[in-house]
Length: 276
Ligand SMILES: *[C@@H]1O[C@H](CO)[C@@H](O)[C@H](O)[C@H]1NC(C)=O
Ligand SMILES: *[C@@H]1O[C@H](CO)[C@@H](O)[C@H](O)[C@H]1NC(C)=O
Ligand SMILES: *[C@@H]1O[C@H](CO)[C@@H](O)[C@H](O)[C@H]1NC(C)=O
Ligand SMILES: *[C@@H]1O[C@H](CO)[C@@H](O)[C@H](O)[C@H]1NC(C)=O
Ligand SMILES: *[C@@H]1O[C@H](CO)[C@@H](O)[C@H](O)[C@H]1NC(C)=O
Image 1 (cartoon, rainbow, N blue to C red):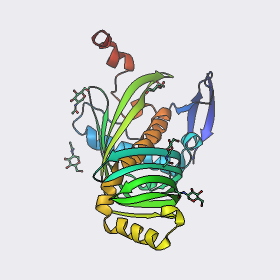
Image 2 (image 1 turned 180 degrees about the horizontal axis):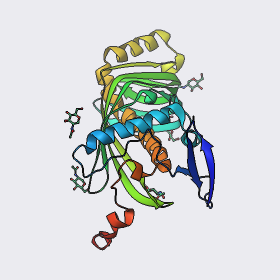
Image 3 (image 1 turned 180 degrees about the vertical axis):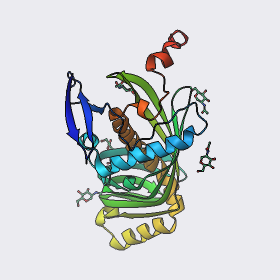
């Protein structure tokens, strides 16, 4: 084990580099002042935890090198590829591939509520994003709202007032004498207040007027369009949140957020016999 000082702004934090990992795996061994510690057994826990997570998130958005190194900037954020197929005869029969995606808006994420389950340390969070925008290349075959589609080109989609209800599964583990969260799954339910969309080169560019009319139609019927695209949008949000949370909690011990968190041995040890 090696230690070195690392400067982020003014305070100096100690990082611990565990040798043996392929990538230099750095994590905090001292609690930064922007994280408020909470006790899960106290009545005010959820309020405290909400402030604590938001405090951490604000720093992550400003830029924590260890997270940016492996994740890239939070806003805009890049996603390589999303492949998506759905067959719902009423709204859409569609196969869409989105590539070179750029997602904007997660830098304005507001954590409205952050609940932690005392039994399994899963999370239930309410998150608000004022506007999320996806830009990328699309390739698409199918129907949306009975409009037959076949084309590829640039697209964007803009979602206003995203209200996300996220549930996340975690698995506690120990690292360097601390307990960490391994975020293993993020599921999201979401609602929006407005959607704007544009696909360039619909119908393979063969009919510009029809392309304009179709985009207009989608925007005029944005609620139906949103329902048709909901699984794709939900998947994008879930994947983005999971990536982000995994990286965030990989560098920051869970002890700093939940002072009275049990060790993984204490939490799962007793249950081993039940599981086996
Ligand atoms: C948590 O905060 C809300 C509003 O901010 C307040 O109404 C509520 O009483 C607080 N809960 C506790 C347990 O302090
Ligand atoms: C907490 O997790 C346990 C075990 O997974 C579950 O039975 C319980 O319903 C959860 N509690 C809440 C408040 O969601
Ligand atoms: C999307 O990609 C998948 C796998 O790469 C492929 O099977 C599918 O046909 C593609 N869909 C479109 C519309 O190009
Ligand atoms: C976290 O969980 C995933 C499975 O969901 C596993 O592959 C990975 O090794 C775990 N990481 C740690 C540090 O335990
Ligand atoms: C789209 O246009 C390209 C060339 O511009 C052509 O090779 C391709 O077959 C066309 N695809 C469709 C589905 O019309």
